[in-house]
Length: 517
Image (cartoon, rainbow, N blue to C red):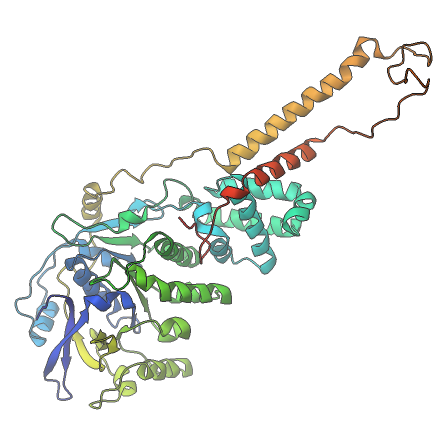
């Protein structure tokens, strides 16, 4: 039932329910992206699990989010349960072997996995605006903030760095507006309030160092299997915007860092976006357009992106058109929107003369799906009604003790567990302000010194003791008009010099605003 170069998904059935043929996903088309959809309880998680198992055994690293907590069982050997054995018998899967898979657990909060962090500088203004649900004016201010930081050598690593920079911008809004464009103090204040809300929601756990290295989610084991990175997202889902933004950032990092490889024999990495509707809900048009661009272009870097969601309408049509491998579980058709979703899903498949897709979608049982994958020269196969194979790993979550043991022997154990707070924008701005204040105080004391040393006595013009008098004309010299700089003026000039001196080393950002290496 298993073939080299192909992942076994399940076995299709004929109209009389007899076995038709095994259904495969060809590895060489694994980077052509995919879609797994279906209503709650129809078997999407199991489908994600068996696809991850197949890619791992083929030597392809996998990244996926564990939204409900039950995907962690992929790290333990499966158990011979009745319903699994029955399914294996129905589809003719003999022998039905159980195995465990190499898993690396990740968690933004560091509770159920290794800490995952990114720096503000790496994330960039576009994704941060998405995270904060910023208005156009606020997004403009954030773009200016990152411009100042990128060109001025001010690393934005965590929340306090951006807060310090925003405070600096608010204090010097008028002067900075002349150079970078209008900076509204009201917008600065609104962004600062949003940052406070993010901090209260736990975002401070995500922003900082050491930042996640892409190479650590692209590991393979000594026996050639791909490591499966599982992000604990049950708590993270309490802040769905942070969840969606994090996954978009990770996708943008992959896009910016990985080299072009064309169409490899198998993907370099497969990336599963569970709860994909959170990525696009209320997303601005410019972000959706850039996500579409990344999905279209990242294929040539060997990365396959698979969206997992309840309704195919959750994914914009421009993105949906890029998804070649599809697994459609049952949908309900009670409301007009659900009826539209059934029609849309049916129309995206290559028709099968043996049945009507729109009718069958509403009749599929649990663990049953309509399957169409790319074959031959990249043409979609005829859709087939398929019984999805049972997983080889455990169905259900690991215990806390089992999870702790997996983390203990993890190849990244100890690399991300401790925070590292190096000098960044907060410290640099604080030190610069302190230095300027000390300089200003010293100049003030120097200016007052002549008056303290007899400078208050009377002088008479023409008697040779007036320092302002010209010796030849007998008239006092005109004042130059020079006035001593204030601390703010000196700070502005210092900042301007820093920016001017670093224009040649300005940071370049990619499609989604993250750093381009």
